[in-house]
Image (cartoon, rainbow, N blue to C red; front, side, top):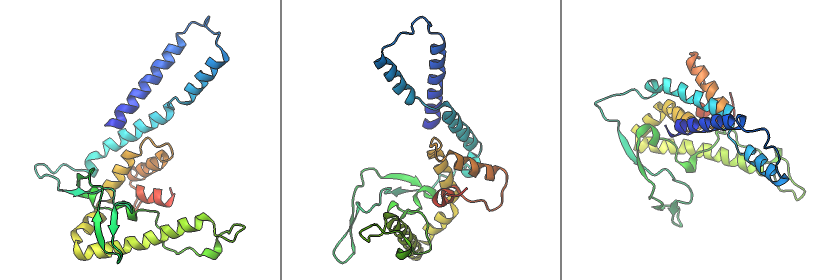
Length: 232
């Protein structure tokens, strides 16, 4: 794994740097103020060995569960499909009456396993909000305009409703897609954990998710749901 190799390389570099610093001759202690400032800036840019060690721990724990999430079904090849992974507002074109006219930006498409391909497109992704925000309950500035937080919550609410419409529509045309989508959240959570294993703000959420899984907690919350709801 790239993340694992990168972490090991950084940890080795830190260890080597610490050894080199310890071997320096203490007689060479005179530095200009400019040189001291440069060294302080370099120190600020150094990797945190504690975070790197946490990342390695997450990778090792995920590896131990790899066969549970992705059991080998050899010789049956895993089905895949061509995926446009950037179906954003910029890449979906509609005409004046709202009908689809084109989808652009196809240069980075790839073949993905179904568990990865069958998920909400980027244009519909967002934090789940089932209750419509009430504008009057939000603060207003001195000009009487509602604060930006209201619009963020309103967008999350509207995206939540659009996702429901999306699933209803795709169920009518491609029920198999919905079946894969609803049965493969565990694989997407695993991929999310691996992708973000070096994110210092998500490490503890990933760790708690792994704790619940390894301790056999019944009905524990998935990783994506934890992140979306900012919950343990």
